[in-house]
Length: 258
Image (cartoon, rainbow, N blue to C red; front, side, top):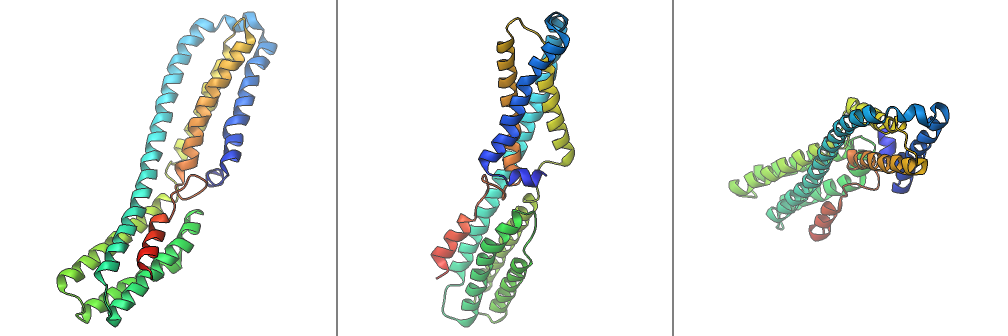
């Protein structure tokens, strides 16, 4: 369900996660006033106001914490892609030359980058991994080993090549891991349940100006569910409209792939 929500177009996610819940929430004070009456509800104002302040602060802290966590992980995913692209560009420079082993290494690296762009990204959007890209990375290591065994590069350069290969491998594992989602299921349950409870708490108040109360409930609901929208949209960094793209890898291919 969360993967489905993350993959929705932005307008559909806003409609489903913000607008519809807000409209439902705004009908709450009207229905509560009709069922219980103004006099009965207004007697709760003093004690309910004190308790609502506590409830609101607790949920605000939890929501803010979740937003910070997913944003940091989203930034980690962007950083991993940039590091992967930087390591690939370095390898291209280190294996420049006309020797067959060097050319084979460049071709293996080009093939890996193409598969990462064309297969890893669509698979990561589905929380999966491309086996073909993994095999291409293995082939890249094999080509680099042949380059070392044949003595086509000095030991210092060979060591740097494998250092950059390790960076590529680590960066790929990071993005594959983050692609499966950041927020645990129990946290999602608490976030959504807390949103419903926090907004529903406003139904126990009663002001003389019912339209003003409805608008205040709507504003609160908008703020709460927009926070949830942010978390849903970036919980899967490689899924949906707000995603980490493969542009850094594409740029390396354009610069060195030829």
